[in-house]
Length: 309
Image 1 (tube, rainbow, N blue to C red):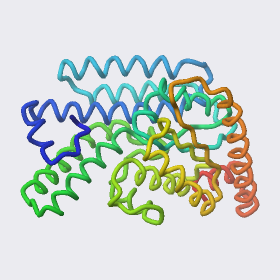
Image 2 (image 1 turned 120 degrees about the vertical axis):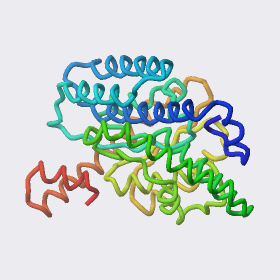
Image 3 (image 1 turned 180 degrees about the vertical axis):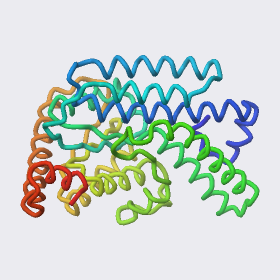
Image 4 (image 1 turned 45 degrees about the horizontal axis):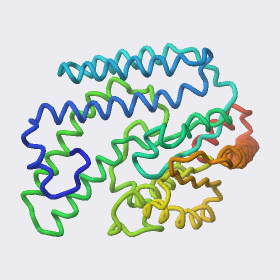
């Protein structure tokens, strides 16, 4: 029901109670941020498997806290402290690869055949939009529809919902402050949509405009490749694939397009390896260019390349 874009959404969830909705929302924010820490730490962990073990531990504890209507902020504080204690080796920089696509496919590792882990195995660091992105977007859609229908009461309710969600979100994010290097605080849907305007009109609803806006955001944040994951014959995914041709030309960015139909794909690893080779070449070229321009050595070059310069 959290995914409902319909005008009757508020009435449908009213019977669940405000406390349940707030707790479910904070659970989404908690897990999103926990996954960001996981993906930013696991490629560099010294003791392999430590990040996965801690992630599973805190995911189970999150479930227990929600079931008991407990304090997720306290658990977030503990999770952050524990993750920061993991031994890491960041001496070898990795290209960061941005993932976009259909919400379920990109979020469910079994559905996308463990794409994040394959990127990490090939020397990359995967960046994935949080589930919060979709929750924000369907809220944006309901507000847009209320404006079109001139239903001001419904619009007011949605804006109040935004304020409450923002307040509850800060309670969790405050505990993780400084623990996530990139995309710590999810931008409003308006920001993502604005970045997508050169490729798509907002009137075309669904994942495509989010995917294209996120792709541009990845460029600005210093990523070196983009992967689009979608179900086989998925119309939104096909739209994004077509638009990525122009995006690739505009930004000189390697792009990998992968459709999933539930069957084993014999050439998948070959395509991933070739794609990651292109990403590493782009990353290393930016490091060299940044190092020559700044004259600050490899440390400064890495920092400059990460900033997108």
